[in-house]
Image (cartoon, rainbow, N blue to C red):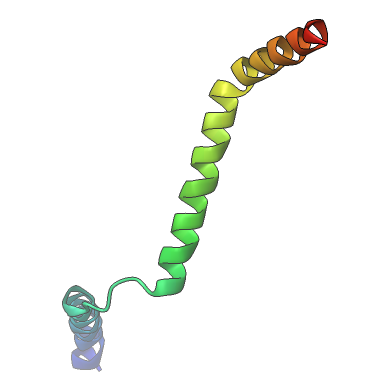
Length: 73
């Protein structure tokens, strides 16, 4: 009985270390779906950041353009 109880932690350690060793050897990489989702998220984040930083400036330029167009005609 004592031998069985003392063997349980050893078996758990060996199973866990084998799992970690197998994870280190796994070289499959990321799937195409994961890469596509990450690229879409990066693109959306870039657009949001650019719009946040340039939105006011673009609105001001557009007001200048549309305000001057009425004086031309």
